[in-house]
Image (cartoon, rainbow, N blue to C red; front, side, top):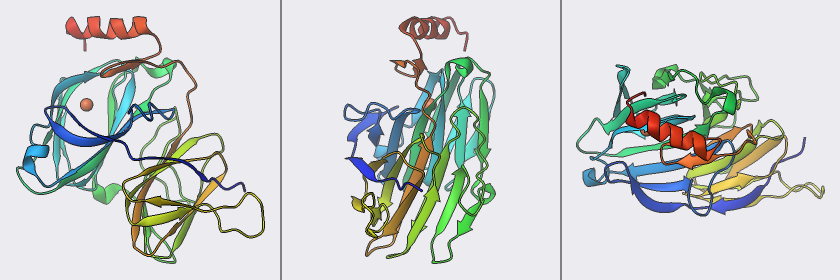
Length: 287
Ligand code: FE
């Protein structure tokens, strides 16, 4: 099996979105516009209330999916179809905006740490105008696989090599979304469908990516340090070894759509005309 290697590293840019929420944008930044089918990756982590209290007041989306994964804190979401709920620490909300949704995402706390990720996953042309829907999973409903050598894999989407299956269903890009904890010095490997774009975001620690050199020319290991995103080369599997510290990272992959992408703020379509139509539909109150 051809091992994937680390080919590029990005640290993202510090910015703010919503009503002044401080975040680091790693995908959807000038350095890394997208990694098909992933349009955006924001990381937010602060225990300073002024960094997050403004939240994300009501705004629209059309043409893609937003995935919120919270590590610490709570967020309340509410939409114009009457859906409302709280995403708890460890929980995930996979929202298919489809033809259009108007929603707000607000911190459900006035102090303490709020930490998590928002990922935007593109929809193919054939599904951009699909009916909006949610896949929401509380922390205790998301499978966690314990690794024999220590550590664990929390599986939000996709399937581990030991057949632990994540709850999220998506037949557009067949995503992998795993949150992996490795004790210092231990290793993990995972099959990733050839042709899927894949990256690792390292939350803490330091990892070596790639297989140990065993005399073959295509084996190599490269270091990824904390708060960085590493893009993986194509291949059939990835091996990760934690360095001298306990390490934690997200492994995310998906099938590229290979379609034209037209972006207009909260709308992502295939053409500029469709973006204009999204603004018109939004202004007419059709969402
Ligand atoms: Fe949103």
